[in-house]
Length: 129
Image (cartoon, rainbow, N blue to C red):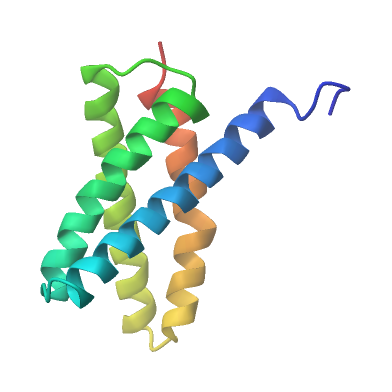
């Protein structure tokens, strides 16, 4: 760390985590609102919330975390990495369940792997110029 603040890589990763937490909040708020206020099914509400949170995440990460411009190429790559993250989340959760572990073990596996992997993929591929 230097006198002006944390190293650029740490600042970028911290922004990525804040963007992820914000997007998660958007997902939760939309799901809860659609289910409790509009009586939507949880499946439909989570589907709408996932898409909305992914858009939020793309905007925050592109413009703030990675200080990039909105481009079709980065949007397509971001969507691909997001879908990979979703597949890994489901796969880790399924594996934990299949092994008889508590859902907390699956959640821990997700939290300890998916954010770091998606950050590295975004840094190396999505936002590569």
